[in-house]
Length: 381
Image (cartoon, rainbow, N blue to C red; front, side):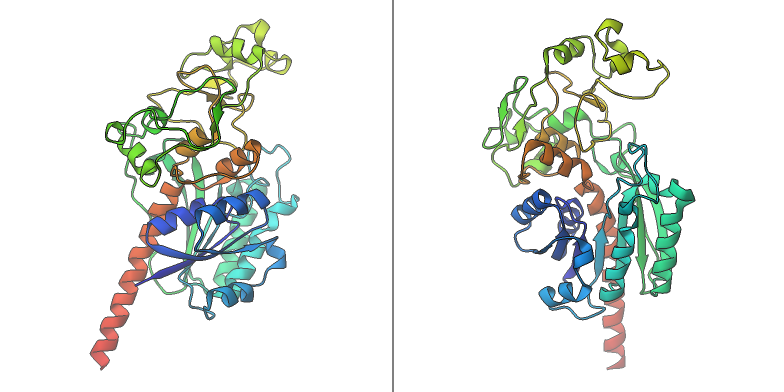
């Protein structure tokens, strides 16, 4: 049975990649961002991509390009822009026009009437305006006939992603199936570590590297299991160029050990703003990744001023490819556009490994429903 999916607010395609790996055919996708669209088209050439703001697209447009009828689609997935809910946005709130884009998602749900709906977002969605967005999404889906609705905060690291990342996922269906959630595959004793994720990538200097065609540091048979998974469709590395750090940031880096942060930097070398920071502040700015640990959350800017983005063993910050590995993007993904846009695409994405385990649970339920329908049909014949 071929299962079908459409991806809204698709970005670079983390959700699509995970659902595709689970056996779904991604029929169509949409995003308004030029460079994300370029990346998606390069990596998902068989998917029909509708460019432009979702406000300008009708559900019928998706039906036209996919040859589906209302109610045929198995699963609609998407992550409406999360900046309005992010804790990194100090002006976050429902007044931000981006906070209402989930209503556009609901409009497409009504027009497509898929069997399953999946919405992913940052955990801040639960706290802004006392969770108004979650409540409105739940009411909207229920009004459309989706009576089975659940939400849960998932930890990406429990599903093989080498990164501390929390995301809220809403799953709903209209076919009376129970909502089932993936069971954690990893715990503190066997998390995929930073070393597991990036140690096979070529060593480069500060400000050096290349965007295309670099050989791996070690042969495939010597790679970790995670690295082998990432390398399956690739013979070389792309997007592996380190930003050029200033002399002052190189000096700061010298004092930061693996797992360390701004607290390890001498006071006189700290930026003016950081000199006023409290030692009890939990910020991980100017941090260095720890080989034996998890990465901190990959952001839209892998900027040392924002978080833990110094390489664990090399005197530089991490590359787009290393950020993509920490997000569990396979190496055949070639991120398009200027480097700042590449980082943004990676940081905004749903980790494909997390998307895949969600998709597998939905696939099990859809397959079970179809088998029962077939048996019932045969019985009546």
